[in-house]
Image 1 (spheres, helix red, strand yellow):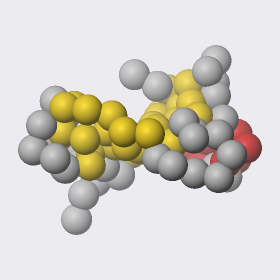
Image 2 (tube, helix red, strand yellow):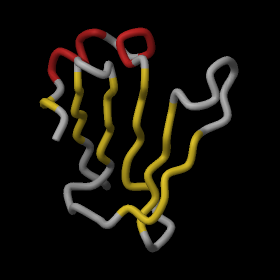
Image 3 (cartoon, helix red, strand yellow):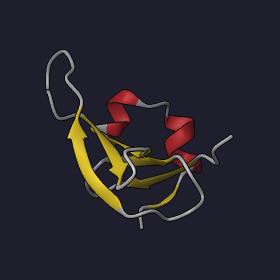
Image 4 (cartoon, rainbow, N blue to C red):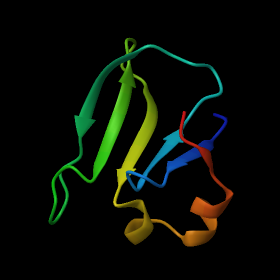
Length: 75
């Protein structure tokens, strides 16, 4: 089971869900196609094609306030 960790940068209102405790080299980032703004969620994919992180823009409108309050500062 992957270890989950959330970081949040209040200045950019962006949160990042890290899906593994091991820091992996990101090979590419892919924007998710969504209703409305097409770049509100980004998948970070490592060089072995595994999803290792998910970035959420406009986080205060998309994630529970409790999660953001408990999140670490963005690295």
